[in-house]
Length: 235
Image 1 (cartoon, rainbow, N blue to C red):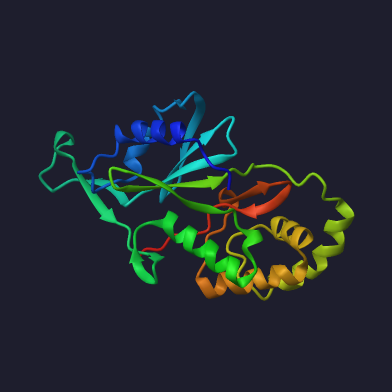
Image 2: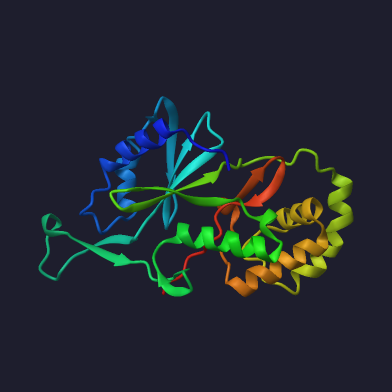
């Protein structure tokens, strides 16, 4: 993965320190309201997006993104005597991210870094976009990942799709597709071979990888690839 400059990392830490303090022990998607205020880091313009378990800073002119894991989810509730002005906030820590072989972790970004290493050892890492820990902000982990795009693989021809589709249709009757579309699975088979695709499905089943819907995959170097692969678990 390309190395970010020291000045960029220092500027990033300074920006995030505004919102992640050393006393902050409930980082949830609520932080997204603040992180959307960040428009640039070290003169690199960016935008912010988030899912259930992490936020992402996406830079216009960099080939990586910055990922901030959430510790849990927030919500609001009312007591039977509550009025609108007495709305109470709640926090529920994540407990389903398996990290360091502990199934009760909260850091879904760390889970992705560990899964990538396991995929590399299993010989299926090409299906996953690499991610690694970049730095800490007041003791809080921040991660970096190569940047994928939402469209791509222009080199795939319709005849390749047609030739592979029958084999894929037969495969889909036997495996958990993890919410991936049949078209995307076919693209994976054409890009990495059908046999490798079968190894990928075996690996995902073994590691408990789930929830690979369309927001969790994209294209990198003109090939289909999985971007977010930590899944989400209630416990």
